[in-house]
Length: 293
Image (cartoon, rainbow, N blue to C red; front, side, top):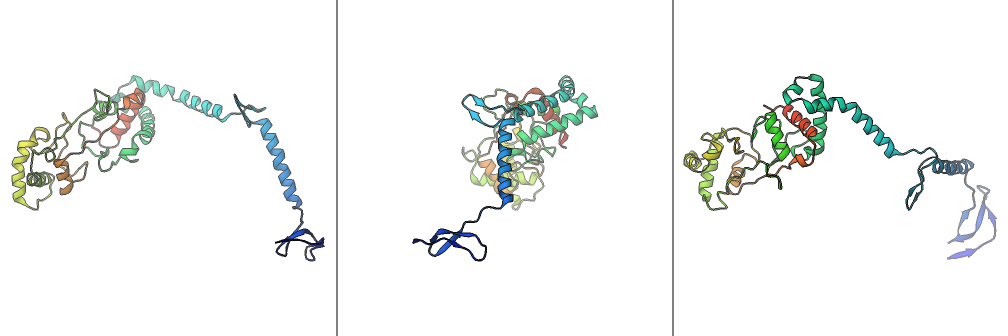
């Protein structure tokens, strides 16, 4: 409850006590320190000066430009224009030369790889990883296991038109039958094929008899795409099965799941998103990662 009381002076500080109190607790009427007042006043002066010198106040059709006419947008545009002008000679040369000639020019190759790396981090790392090591369902670009090949022309085709990219008639397409889902093989037969496929990559089958049965099933159903020894077929994008590199993991459960109802990933067609020069830089960078041919 608030009560009125007479004017008093605090005996400790000598400051007047506000004539009103709350539950017997009074409030000192102490003015702010002089340094605080001066600092506040300086801030007000600074703000007023800023409003006059720099863009500050918006209005319906725009904003106040300020006496100095400074603009961060203009500054960024000028910086980008200067960078573009500095890179123009290299970019012009890149556009004219083929991949082999670029790779043979150390200075130009360094420039292209730097640009390709930046483009990769911006557009490709979300799926392939910042270091291009891939992940489950996303190819590792550091190895030499390529579905369609890893030379310059092949990489350019893949980056330009993607894989199973909607709306691009030139996109790469590889379709593995759903042997289990479509009742082409029974569960037991899929287990046998799985045992044989794992044996191709050097994994000793837990049931040798199952692998032997799977060999004939593999010949009847899989050789047309993957080859007799599981070496793959780049003409149709069929992966190599005779190594330890797997797109969707190489344990028995994962391999059996892929045979039963295969997963089919999608890669965007970058020709509609990136200009030819950017794609060329990406090709050079991906090729340089270690798995290029």
